[in-house]
Length: 258
Ligand SMILES: [Mg+2]
Image (tube, rainbow, N blue to C red; front, side, top):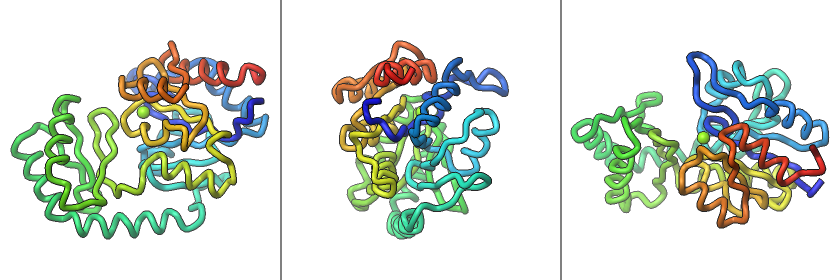
């Protein structure tokens, strides 16, 4: 094969399609392709905005358990056959950095909360009583919220956020899908030149660059910004949506494997 040893795959919108009642659309051939590559020694990581409980929920409807889950755009877990375990000290350091950040950013978070509650129809999102994100009604409303935050976050240089469509999660600037993928690569001693990454939304942008993955792809349903960086990085913009596009991209880059 061309040297691909690791797949970094977004889940919602990339591996699965729109929900039809209680089931998402899963592309025919996708699971077979992933199993086939795993048999050939390729490691597979979900790189998702979902938290661990939401990954477990996802895997009840998606019949493939990845080797690694990179969760909430910042933590790294290995599948041990029955449960997820931390990989090295990354998750501990990540949590400490976020505890410090959320303490420092308290006045900024309060400003964001007031703006969201007074001037938008969006919903503030809390975890353990802490404002950790916002869910907007529309993409345009999220654009407006992001502009508000951009105009005020200079007070807190480490403050950043990850956007997936109408969802925004606050985070430390050092942590995103790209930095967590680089950490997994460091642990596995697998380089970007041996890594394939695919995603469809804004929060995927940090991993869709050549310093994270030599082999870039996005499905047809991706936002324009993602299609732009994948094209610019010599990647593959698929004609098929979600999992169909992933299968298409894998066959494009690994013709000898299929
Ligand atoms: Mg997605």
